[in-house]
Image (cartoon, rainbow, N blue to C red; front, side, top):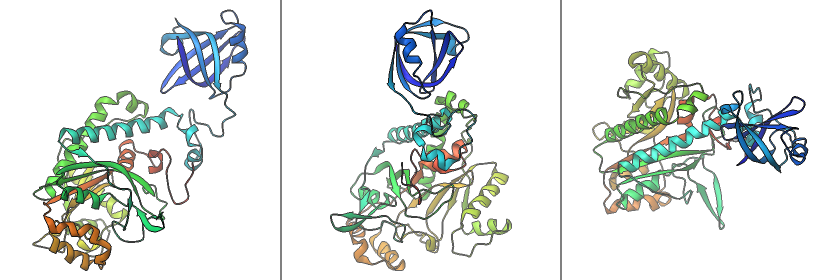
Length: 419
C-alpha cells in the first residue's frame, strides 16, 4: 500500500521515529524503527522536515495508541518535496495575526480549522445550486467585463479593453435582466463581482462572489422573499445534516430557522431605529449601526437571526428597481440580514419601458450610457425580480468568523493584491 502526504511532525525516541503524515483532515502514524525498516528508509527519514511531502510504501499494523488504531510500517520512502523552515505557525493555538497569515496563505490553509471553512463554503455553493436546479432554474454565465458601470458611481474598476475603457462588473444584475428579457424565465449565476471601494472593514472585499437569482412572471417582491427564505433554510439544513464532522471540528452547531423570517418595512424602520437612539434622515438608508440595531430589535421581538428589510426609499436605490405604484417614494426592494449583517439584496425590477426611462432621468443618468440596456424593454419584458446572496458574507456569519477575509482563499482588498 502507498501513502502520500505532508509530514506534520517527526518524534524521535531513539531507535524508533514516529512520523505523523497528514492528508486532508486525516492523519496516519508512520512508525520507523531500526529493527523493522531498511537502511534506505532510515536514511530518508533523517532528512525529513516539517511539511515535507513524502510517499511511503508499506502496510498497516494494529496499534491501539496510533491514530485510528493502526500504524503504518514503511518498506520504502521517497521525499517528493523537502520543506524549508516555516515562516508562520499553522498548527495548534495559532497567535499569528490575520494579515501575516494571509501573506502566507498556502501555509495557513494547512490548519484543519482554516481548511474546513472552505469545505463549508463549498457545501453552501453546492446546496444553492442543488436547490435551484430542483426548482427548475438554469445556471447561466454573464459577462464580467462590461461597457458601462452597472450601478453608476465611482466604485468600479476600469479595464483597458483593446484601447477602450471598460469596467469589471459590480453585479451581474443588468445582464441577468436581459437574459429574462430573452425568455429564460428562471436563472441563477454563481460568480465574482468587484467594487473599487477603499473600505477596510471586517465585512467588505474588493472582489467577492455571489449566488444571483432572477425569476420572471413574479406577482411581486414577496414571491422573491419566499424563494429566498426557503433556499436559505434548505442550505442550512443540509449543512447540519452533511457536515457533522466539520461542524464538530469548528466547535459549532447549526439550527436552521423554523419560523418565517420577520419583515421590517420602511418607513417603520425609522421609528424602530429612533427607539434605539439611532436617528436616520427620512428618505435615507441606514448604515452599519442601523443594521445592528435592527438585528437587536428582531432578536428581542421575534427571537430570530434572519429577517427581511423591505421597501427601501428610491433615493437610496439604483434606477432599475421598481417603485411602489401607489406610493412611489418607496421601492419593492428587499435585503436579508443575518446576525446583524446584510447578506443579500434584491427585489422586483422595473419592466415597463416608460417607467424605466423616467427613473433613468430621475437618477440623472445619460440615456446614451444606458441605452444598451433599456432599449430591450421596448420589446416586451415580463414582471421579474431577483436577489444576490453574498457567499463569503453568508459563510462568515454561519461560522461566526471575525473578518470576512477569513472566508476567502486569497482576499482582494485595497492593500492586498498578492498572493
